[in-house]
Length: 506
Length: 105
Image (cartoon, rainbow over all chains, first blue to last red; front, side, top):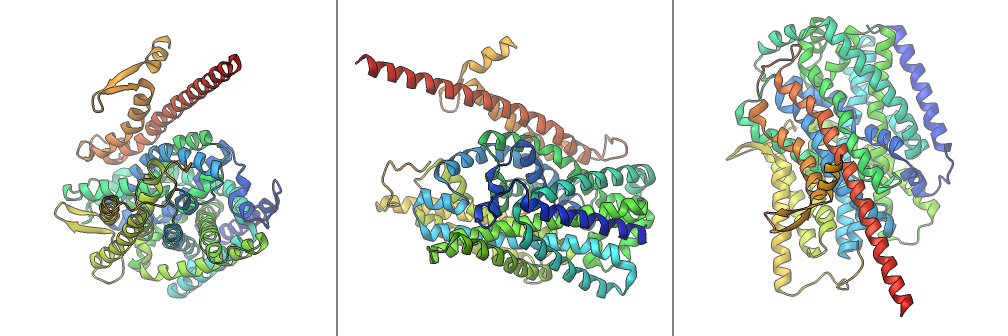
């Protein structure tokens, strides 16, 4: 139930949260005017806090709103998120400790620093930074959609639906901008601990409530009566399923904010151990995803969801279950958990994008910026990027918010050859890597547009001879072919990266 | 335990590269790949039955792989740590040897 009690609980806990954000900025005091302090928490997090930070990074509005929403709208295919958040950690355990050691040895703070070091190319490093920033924008947009969904649920009974939808969006954006400006990553970490505690409470509360009050059998019968494939995959979607989860898994650790979270840990060993235990965090994601059809087992919640226009229906699945099944004080707490579950990651992502901009783009153009100036630029651009992110909110209907993350994935996958291959070999040609990146990004955007018939984006799958597959896989394949062909041609012509042959790049 | 330790320190023939590889490396690779293989085999778990508490097999099978995956990965992480420590020890020993040789000269 939504009533004055749930709103009071929501606001009271939000005040505690904001306080933690401010206090976090002073916690284990470092000089916050230095960029590394503001953006990387001073690089002092151990396994436990690192686990919290990465958990807060990864389990976001994607988990609470976007995945259940797409499962509700399109069925079992979007459960790909579950295998995705398992196998991504195998990839992380292999790649990230290696990266941590190299970064630690050479003082790299970003992926672009590394690429510049290995391939000796400013053009490539700046392009990698740019792609990293742009890829964060739709992911930030997804978080804003999640925050908006919570405010819609909270304020829904106070006015006309369309007014509430717009007002919620503006309010979410203002809160996000103010929070990032003041607290930096350290504030976000400490606040993330409260977020995780609240999320745990809400997941357990809702799962228990759904399991006891709305039975799975009813959900199964009612959901089976619809035209959506809720309980198994049609065999035509096998290739879509694995390409979505495998390439999402490869994409996750390429995002600048996840790279930041990795570098904020204190050793390569803790990076690996943290990653190995993160699939446990995923259990919550798996259960929440199932709410996409569990809503059919709770008639009051289904009625609530159906009262919204179809463009935002899906986003109300989890809030709807919370409102109908939990007592009002608990629903206030659970909704706040989801709200800051969008806010904290959005802040972390914006900080990562801003760091990247300051370090690898602004400083390339004007190398003599003072440390104080750096921090100011990063703070300003963190806000600018959130404005740009807002643009994506309007391209994709909220119910399909997961496409925002998948589109970010298509873009960020294109840095894989420079970043991941770059950790294995420095023998790829830098111009070929640049052309591959360009080919991957352009083909990815083009295929995305074509697959959606140049209208609003509701899918990231494209039909092929093998049935629909994830566009990210195709764009990356094009990218890699260009890189290999280009390197082969460059070798044939004796063009090198202009690095001394035995330069110490690793 | 002793047997396991002996195995982890042994070398086995790599049929692909036709050379000897460390058993510990193979173990780590296998542990990291088990969840991937289990989840790529979509036709084996794409069914409603057997249900668990009313939940379709498709769902609970994949959720089950979250704790199982964490277990595989955590063991792999422990082995990796062991391997890193051993390599560090060997490196230190090699350095010591090189230093004492220099001294004798």
